[in-house]
Length: 321
Image (cartoon, rainbow, N blue to C red; front, side, top):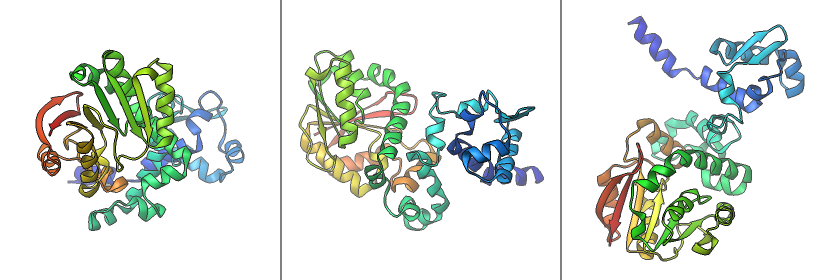
């Protein structure tokens, strides 16, 4: 019984997760990597309280993230994985002033989401996640980088595991900076692509298509997927619908159904309970199962034609009218 109680205490503790997030936000993993310093020295540099910083660094040492040397605290090889240049996306996910790190802090109001079914993000910040991204460009940049990091490992699988060549023109709805669409077009030289996303992301897509010599086969529209979409042989929604509740998901699917004969929905089909809560707290959305998507799509004259697993955790649902 004591073991079970201890396990539950460890599972419910906020101390270590917040210590790691504060360390990232203060830049400690990078600052102390090759240049050890005492808490007193760092406190002056970072404009924080020296005693409190020493307490934080002591806990980071207990965790193996930092170590105490004769010259002061130093980041360990393990702790270096939290650095901005580590290439694993952790720094972007944990930083208090990145899109993901900021959104995760809304979990303190999870009880609001459970009571109401609404996102907790506006309770903490006074407006929804997407409005914050629009008004604060550094959050939009961090979010786009987060999405690019996620996509980089999936793109080769998505390109290989589905026959994209069947479509003359693919409309990538909410396609971000265009990395997936660019890879699909590179592997299928007879295809054309049209990407739709908010203007800040659309500008990045135009640049990427130019860099890869695809400007002659691509169009980019800066706009919302709640507005009328350009027409094509198929509309692609990659990890889009889980960000929205059913009412907004219906609006997005309606636009896609207007724009093409086929709608390709890539989602995880509700395989992670943790991710479900993230979608709820951040956006008021959720992961859905196959029958949930069939129900949503049928309201717009779309029927499920096939299900193809394109990555270890993502399936492509092909709907046709």
